[in-house]
Length: 192
Image 1 (cartoon, rainbow, N blue to C red):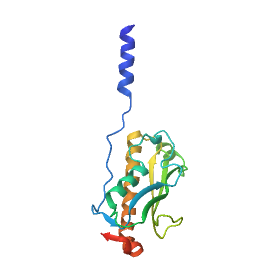
Image 2: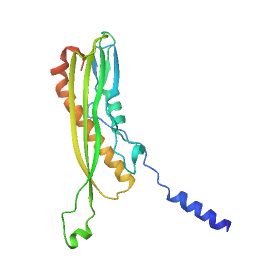
Image 3: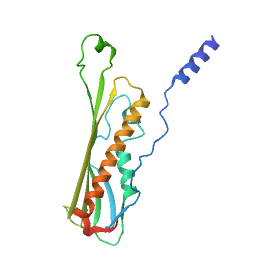
Image 4: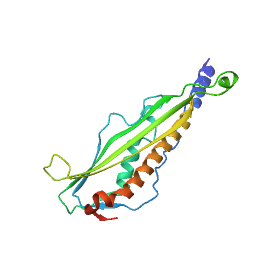
């Protein structure tokens, strides 16, 4: 009897799912942009940064972590001005929808239904004077992408999908940032 329980415990622990090691979000450009500002704040102005499904917030790659890493890698403040730079994440979401099966007959039995993940990310760089309620300078950048996955995919495949989504959104945000920073915030840039 004891051997039976030990065997069950061993089987349960062997079948336990472990998520893969943490993957790092990478950027094409490793240079940072220095702004004339005293301090930097990151504000997440949305309800949830990841969809709720069986992975929940256990995914190692969330949009929140990706944005924080991007801000810390690419944006610095000089400390020589009285302005405050607020990085406001206005929208960061991944929405899951199921594709309806369009096929009929034998082909519909052989193909698995798909889940479509639509992701959006909108970030604003806002410069405030110390006692100002409204920003003096604003630059808003946004990106979106769509990825699909077979229904019933493993947690590893979903984690890879979320990593790919975060990587694609951050890459698009980074391109928009590089393209527009000198146009909209040129007088506040000290090093590019």
